[in-house]
Every structure is written in C-alpha cells, then in structure tokens.
Length: 532
Image (tube, rainbow, N blue to C red; front, side):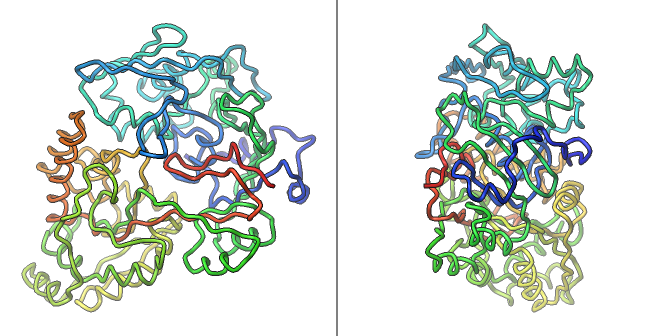
C-alpha cells in the first residue's frame, strides 16, 4: 500500500537532525543507498524487499529468526517453544525485559508481552478486529500462506506464554514466523491510537522492539532512524542511520565512491570490476536462496497449451542469458526450488536450447507460422534478475528465431505487481527469494490456492502437483517431506508453467572502513555496523 505523502512526509523530529552533508563526517552515522521507497512502515501490509529492509529489519523483531548456519528456526522474541505430538499446538515462551521504542505520539508503559503477539496475529486474521481494515487491511503474506484458515486460535496463557492452535498440522508453521509479515507490533500503542482516533499512526509512525526507531521520512528522498537505546540484543553500534532512496544503480555506485553512502545493495554485474579496482570499496556476496524465472500465463492462449510452453522453453538459450547478464553472479536454474533447499531435485529433465525441437512442437500445436505475444519485464533489479530488460531482449530474439514475435512491456513496480496478480500478462519475468528457508515458501507459488489470490502468476493449477505439496506441508519428517517435493518438481518440469532461468548470488558493496554489517537469509542487520 503506497505511503501517504501528506502524512508520512512529515518530520518526526525537526530540531537537532543531522543534515545529509553533516552526516558524511559523523562517525556515529551510516548512510545506506536503498533502491526504493517503502510501500508502508508496517510489514504486514507490504510485499517488497525494499519495504522489508526499511521496516521489519530495522524497526521490529519476530518470535523466531533463522539460524544462519543451517537456516532453521532459532529464538528471537520467543526464547523457546513446544509442539504437541499431533503437530497442531505450538506454545511459545516469550523473552522478558524487551523494550518497545517510543515516538512523539506515545511512550510505552510496559515491556513486550503476550498481548502484543495476540494483537499482531488477530489484526491480520480476524475481519472483525478493530484494526483489520486500518490502512487498507490487505495482508497478502498472511492470507497467501493460508494462516487465516490454519490458525484456529491464538491465546495469551499469561504475560510470557502464547499458544497457537492449528486446524491441521503444518510443517512450515514455525518457519513462517521468521518472516517479515510476522513482525510484532505494540498492542498498547494500537489501543492508545484507536482511542485518539488516529489508528493509522500505528502503520505510519511505527513502534517496535527493533534496533532502530523511525525519526524522519521524506518519500522518494530519505528515511532517518535513531538507535534504540534499550535494544534487547545489546548496544546498537551506530546511533544514526540514513536510507538515501536512490533507484538508479549507477547513481548508487557514484554515491558509494564519493562516500555519500557507505553501503549499496544489488550492484550490477558490469559494476563488479570497478568496485574491485577501487581501494576504498569492497564487494561482498552470499549464496542466495532464490530463483528467477519466466512465467507463462496458462490462463491465456496459447500458453494454456502445454506444447507451446514446452516449445518456447526449448527455444530459449538459457546458458547464453546467464553468461551475458549474470556473469559471475548466477548459475542456470532448472527447478522451482533453489539448490541446497530441502527437497531440491537435481535430476529433473531440462529444456536444453533446441530451436528445431521448438519448431516441431509449435507445428504440433497448430502454430507452425508462430504467433504474437508479450513479455513483461521487471522495472527493478534483483539478485535473481539483475537486468530484466536485457533478459527480455534476449528472450525476444530467441523466440523470433522460431516465428514468435514478442513485445516487451514494462510498468512501474507497483503497477507491475498489481498487473501480475490480476493476470494481465501473457508471459512475465519474475522471481522469488526465500522468506523462511522452507521449500513450501516456493512450492506454494504454483499452488491452486494462489490462482485465486493472484500469488500464482502462472495461473497454473495441477491437481497432482497441488496434492503433493499439500501432503508435504502436513509431514514433519524432513526426509519424507523432501521426497514429496521432489515428486512435485517432476510434475512442474513436465508441465512447464515457468521456465526457470537462474539462481542468483546476493551482492552488495561497502566502503572498506565499514564493519559489522550482515546480510543473510534474514535480510540486512545494521545493529553492529559501524565506521572504523
């Protein structure tokens, strides 16, 4: 949901704020060149990566986090938990002594407790909750995961114990609570704002338990944060943090070189050499749990025809695309799951580049003379797609060799996402980055339930595939779950609703005097980042 300029462009604190130029010389200040403005300051209402970095990863915490070493759930605001033998009851023990931040509208009178967890869940789950419709009331992650139906009840047993009762076992439930939408909001703040008649303040001027508090926001310009002096994980290394909103990749690199920012995300592959040559900069990378793909809209002709989807998969030189666009930043993908994830199937039959095979299949489909279609191209760079326009042009060229004329279409990012959910495209470049380290996070992108919600941009519903992933989510044994996901991937490969393109590494660049900044499966952690 777009932020309102009239509300969120206001200053939270006018006096004493650092100017952008003064910030360059301040040792207790970091500047991060982010790629876009946040959609909202409540991650329950948002779906984009830049929003999550600016909100859930800065302002909030979740009950559990992902352990970096093995990507399994680990304690955060919950210190431990128990799961009933039937897999339907989860009881969390909450951390004591965790302080909420404050703002000009509200000063908390108590620490984090079970009421905050219940509020966070019920706002999203219950259509009759007082806050459900505030700020538009669109909780895409919560509903796309089916949590509104899966959670039968959530209750505070006392201040520091919360019990979830599920309608059925769900092996990904714990991992789901590591995700950004599960950030814990303050029930006390929400109650106070509702009584004042300003409930939107909860989303526009957030209060959380995270390492930073929001200080100032100017849409499409900057966000200022100030360190939480009572952060439960210890002292925050840099008192001031500024997000300089810089959509253009070349401008981000220029700002890094001139020390106008000290961290940039997603440098382009063609920028790597320049970063490596600069003695003041460092290039960093981590293996990303992601997949970039071309989705065929199977609800539109001719992509409702399997032969056509297979033909255009054979017509595409995937290896050439990865070599030209990703260079050292990615490798060709063959599955809907990224390598290294539970259940990844490395023995899937692939669609090797074979234009002759493509022509034969098009002839079988009655389209020997080809047809006209479109390719939607993302307006943003992602680790799984660093240059969407270039990829679209290469696909366009390959398809032209088999008689298919494709028009490249692009939109502003919000409009692009909205169009995909409505199914307006014939084919589209898209991708996914793991939210929680669990294969269900990817597999459900092609589930039948996602066709109606719009999360399944291929609009593909295969009953055998859907049955396999639903069986997998109900099984707690990893080995058994893995076999079911492998079988589901075999169905996926034969039916070709997507053409997987690449698994990308996650790159970022910093000034070489920066230490303590961490990027991992949980996102970006600035709490220990500082200039030396």
